[in-house]
Length: 174
Image (cartoon, rainbow, N blue to C red; front, side):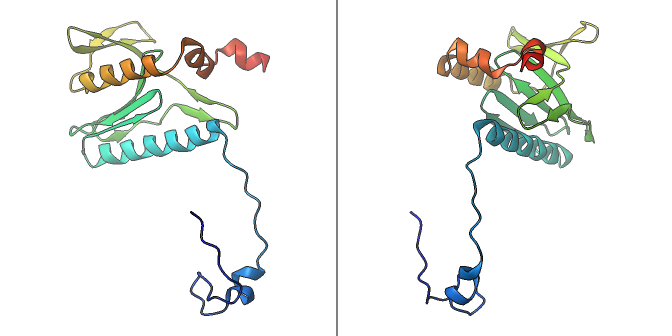
């Protein structure tokens, strides 16, 4: 609940002046609510920065954010997973910050995914897009990623999940 400040009350900025003689004179800024896309961008980039910082400190962290799971390890690695299309990219390798392949503009977030992933025999398996090599990602929170993916697929309709992903053709047509 918002509290209303009386004109003759002390200003909340702690200037010691009455509100009407201090901040009450300032024009109120018209702020528009953030769009869902803007909220996601701010939140995604904030989460990426938090996980990168945790990896630099070699602190294990797991964050779930919409269709994304981000995590860091004690070894100093950090990863970003997109759970509906099974894509992922490494953000930090053994404490070395890799430039996040994330490009933002007011309408979209573009991520240059390096790998697709799948879970086989409770192991996280990655396939590189560049050369199709398959490798196991050791130390991944596989159980948490699988559980989160199940929840997301139950929570959203196929159409909602499709609308989240824009193909190159959809971007060019817009």
